[in-house]
Amino acid sequence: MKNNLTLSFALVASLGLAACQSTTSSIQDPNYRTKNGAATGAIAGALIGGMFAKDDHAEGALRGALIGGLVGGGIGANLDAQAADMRNRLGNPYVTVTNMGSYLLVNLPDDVLFASGSATLQPALQGEISSIAANLVTYPKSTIEVVGHTDSVGSEAMNMDLSQRRAYSVANILIGSGVPAGRVSAYGLGMTQPVDTNATEAGRAHNRRVEILVRPTN
Image 1: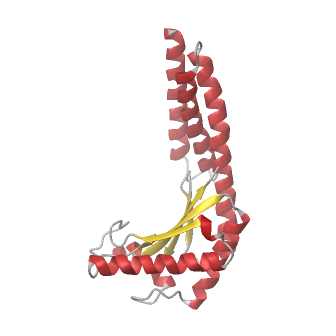
Image 2 (image 1 turned 120 degrees about the horizontal axis):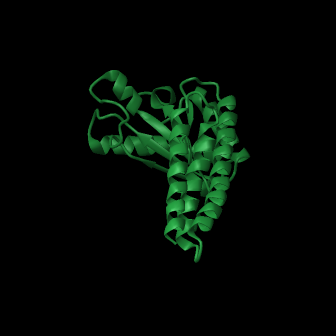
Image 3 (image 1 turned 60 degrees about the vertical axis):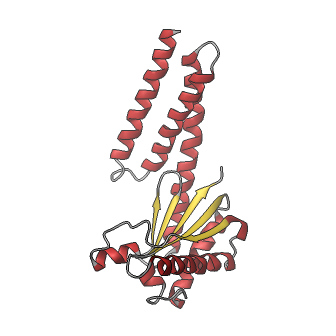
């Protein structure tokens, strides 16, 4: 029993190292998210398999690692493919698509989306949102969160309201372009989640954004 447990923990440790190495090499390897998803899934599977195997923890860990790796790798590969397709559809270089490993993050700087203080989408950017919608229709097995963010200029209440209205504007274009409303949620977070300093104009510009989070459902 002791040897089996030791082998299970050694397997998990080695898989953890593989995941770390995959992340470290992310810049060089365009498929690192897929590999990292497989490694992470394998770790989780090994832990679960080792815990619930009645007689042989090592065998349970190995089976769990295999299943978890297949599931995690499949999700990562699907996200890689969807991210590549979405980038190909977009024409604005300021709109970015990042595979976060378990979901896609689409970043839309609000300076290119809206006039100052407005929640009405610029006409030129409506086409970009429609392109994102076409991708989401092509890849239907996901839920979509549209999240508005602001900088810290102005009152908290004003920024919360503006971020919500901007999130709703983007969500309405997605739905109007064919994405089922049941897959889409929209909300604003105001100034509560900055990604840069609010002490400079460049930092505030980074904080003013709408994000689309695409989360796989299987």
